[in-house]
Length: 322
Ligand SMILES: *[C@@H]1O[C@H](CO)[C@@H](O)[C@H](O)[C@H]1NC(C)=O
Ligand SMILES: *[C@@H]1O[C@H](CO)[C@@H](O)[C@H](O)[C@H]1NC(C)=O
Image (cartoon, rainbow, N blue to C red; front, side):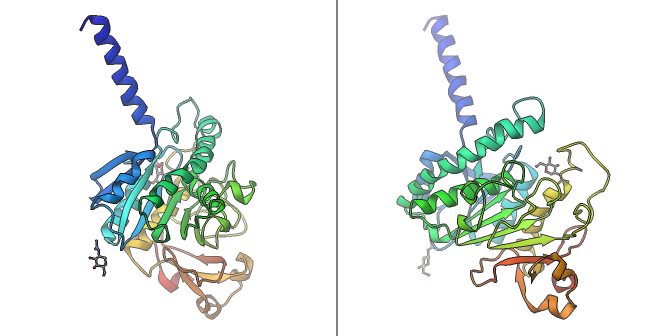
C-alpha cells in the first residue's frame, strides 16, 4: 500500500468512527452501569434475541435532555436506580451528539440544533419501535422515561406511533422542556395523547420546564402560585444560564424519580383541581386522594397532584409532604 492509500484508509476510518459516534444509539445495560452493548437504532432489534431481553419484565428506556451524555448525572441517576431495582430490562437512548452544544452559546445551540434534532428524532423513532416490535419487543411492557427534551422526544414518538396503530402504554415526562414546545399542538410534544398513561413530574415550571399540565397526571413538587418555583436546597441567587446552580430546579425532577424508585412509597402527590384549591385544602382533604410517583396506574384520577419534599435525598416525605 502506498502512502496516499494509507492516508485514504486512515481518513475513512476517522469518518466511520466519528460517524458512528454521532449516530443515535440504544445502550442496553447488562445488570450494571458499566456493562452494556450499544447499537445504532436500525440494528437495535438484535438485542431481543440475547439474554438482555427478559420478556417477563418491563423494558425501561431513558432518554436524556440537552447536553446530556451517557455518563452524565441524569443518566447515571436514573439508570442506576432502575438497575438496582432489578425489575426491568434497562436501556438508554443515547443521542449525545444531537443533544450537544456544537456552536458557541448554549441558548443558540438549544434553539438551532438540539430542539430541532429532538423533533426529528421523535419522528424517526416510529421506525425503531416498529422494528423492535416486529422483532418481538412486547410494547405493552415498555416504560419510556425522558428528561427535558428527552420527554418531548418520547411524546412525539408516542403520538406518531399511535397514528401507526401502536399504542405505547407508559411515558414518564421528567420536567419536560418548555422552550420551543409549550405552545405546540399535542402532536408535536408530550401530551396525554402520547401514551395510555403519561405521568409528568414538574420541578422547574418557572424556567426550563413546562408550566402547563401535559400528562394524564401531573405531579407538581413544591409548587407555588406567586413568584418563581424554587426546590428546597436550590439557591435563589441569579446564576448564569445552564450553570449547575441554574439547573438545580430542573435537575431535581430526575432526582425525585430516582428516589421514588429507590425508596418506594415515599413520594406521594395529592389530587386537586389546581394549586389554589390544594393550598386551601385541610390535611384530611389532602390525604383523601393520593397517587404514588413512579408507578403505572391507569386507574388514577387524571389531573394535578401536589406535594412538598425534603431539601436533600431522600426527598420524599410520604404523607407529611401533603
Ligand atoms: C418468564 O416467566 C415464565 C412463567 O413464570 C417462566 O417460566 C420463564 O422462565 C420466565 N422467563 C425468564 C427469561 O425469566
Ligand atoms: C444538572 O444537570 C446538568 C446537566 O446534566 C449538570 O451539568 C449539572 O451538574 C447538574 N446540576 C446539579 C446540581 O445536579
